[in-house]
Length: 111
Image 1 (tube, one colour):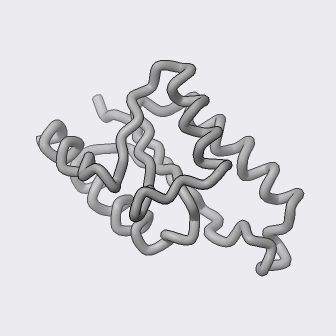
Image 2: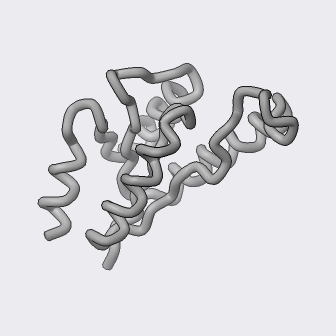
Image 3: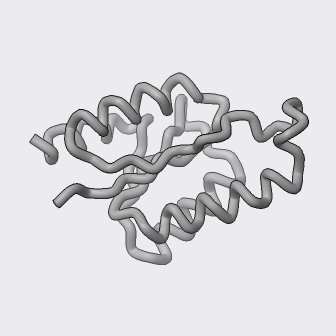
């Protein structure tokens, strides 16, 4: 059975999210990841109302995940990501971090 992993973090790191999606998928993980990468309001479709919807969606993905993987480049964790981490911990989900090299743990576990 495949483990479901949810990638969370600032969507400013879109390229890293996409690299992780591939790396984890080819190693047997089912991956949830952001599908909208501009929540800053610059994109007219990504204003505050859409951000609220995406934040709710992120919580639902955490609920359905086995593992939460934080894309925290240089240790950066924003307020939305912090709330998502807190939610995952409340549910006793394992939370792993990109900045701590935890990707290697996931790949080793998969193989």
